[in-house]
Each structure stands twice: as structure tokens, then as C-alpha cells.
Amino acid sequence: MTTATAPPAADPSAGLPRPGFGRLMLAEWTKIRTVRSTAWSLILLVVLDLGFTALFVALTMSQWDNTNPGDRAQISADPVSFILGSGFFLSQLTVCVLGVLVIASEYSTGMIRASLLAVPRRLPMLWAKALVFGLVVLVIGVAVSFAAFFIGAAIIGDRMQVSLGDEGVLRAVIGGGLYLAMLGLFALAIGAIVRHTAGGITGVIGFVLVLAPLAMLLPGSIGDHVHAYLPSEAGTLIAKAHQGPNDLLTPWEGYGVFALWTVALLALAAFLLKRRDA
Image (cartoon, rainbow, N blue to C red):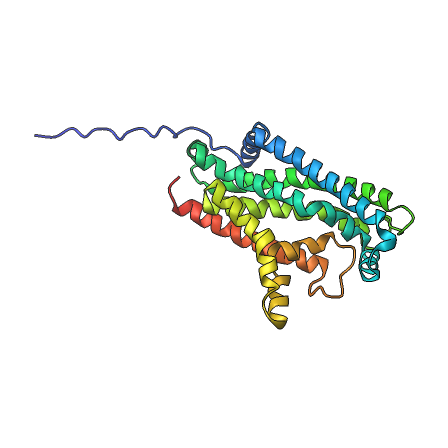
């Protein structure tokens, strides 16, 4: 007597074409641009950056004659860094928040399950999300950086001569956008690792705003080196036209250090994405 063997269950995904990387990027672009938090965060980035640039530069110039000679010499040595840094200090927080939200919000809403069902191999989804988000922030960041530079240069007027044609200035202005793009990827990586919106935002802000002052409390050259190699401190050097006398890294070296931090965190995020359940 023979026993009939049931045919194997059909794989529902069999015969369906795997989405190409271009389609994954299009899907991630659709998700990013249709979420309200993206538009509001980018609008807030523009408003804060340009608003605080105009405010801080105008206040400094209004008190220019009464400013400490040492502070005036420091600003005059690199006015581009002064202009861009005036708006970056707070506006960069919007990129930190948005970078975490892009990935962590999918876990909080459960959308990540649909994303991983469409892309079972998982990692292409992460790379597509990172690439699309990085390009969006890069374009907006470069545009805002140029706008901030022209606003600041107009307010400075004849007090200091600053032009895009000066040595290192164009690289520094473009570098402002490069810094924001890398910061966005850095935040996205932390969001993918933590998978919790509040925890991810806290972690990124801790890296950007809290660790640097704490590192300065360390004694001697140890504190100087720890401070110099922190991600945000190293990354902001790319937005300086010239290497400062106390900077341990050149602008491109600093950006390279920031990139290494980001790549390491993205690699950890990719490893955990493959190992953990959605």
C-alpha cells in the first residue's frame, strides 16, 4: 500500500520579479516625500539656518566696534566659518531628527514589515533609503549653505572682504551641504540601530551636542584628540575655508573621520537588520 505525498506548497513570491535597485530608490523617494515630517523638517532647516545666520551675523556686526580684538581677529581669519556656523548650530538638529524618523518611524508604525516583505534580502532596502535620503539632504543643504553665505556676506559688507573666489571659500560653502548630508546618514544609522524614535533622537543629539563639551573636560592632549575625532566636531571642519591654528585635522581629514564614523554605524545597522526580527 502506497501513501500519496502532498505536493509542496507553492511559494507566493515565486515567479514574481525581484525589485531592482532603481525601483527601490523610487519607492524610498515616494515614502520620504509623502511623509509630512519630511517637508516640515526641511522647511524648518531652511528657516532656522537662514534666520539664525542673519540674526547672529547682524548682532555681531552691530557690536563690531565694541567686540574684543581677539574675537574680531578670529572672525576675520575665517569669516566663512563664522557665517555658516551661525546657522548650523541649531538647524543641524532638524537633520538629526529627520534622519532618525526616516527609519525608526517605520518600526513604530509597523511599515517596516511591508518594506522587508517586498525586499526579503533586506540590505538593498537600507542602502536605497540611505542613498535617497542622503541625496535629498545634500541638495537642500548645499542650497541653504549658499543662501546663508550670501546673506552673511551682504550683512558683513565692507567690514571684511569675503568672496566665493577666495581660497577655500567655495569648498567650505559646498562643504556645508556635505556636512548636513553626512549628518543625516549618521542619524539614519543610529535610528536603524536603536529602532526607537525617541531613543534614536536622544542618541544623535548626545553625539552632536553633549559629547563635545564633555571631551573638552578631559586633561591635556587626550581631551584635545578625543574632541577633535568626535563625529560632528571633525565633520564641521569641511565648512571652514582654512584650517584653524588649534585644529588637529584638515577640513578633508575631518570629513573623512566623520565618514568613517558613519560607515561604521551603517555597517552595524546592516548587520543588526539581517540578524533581528522586524
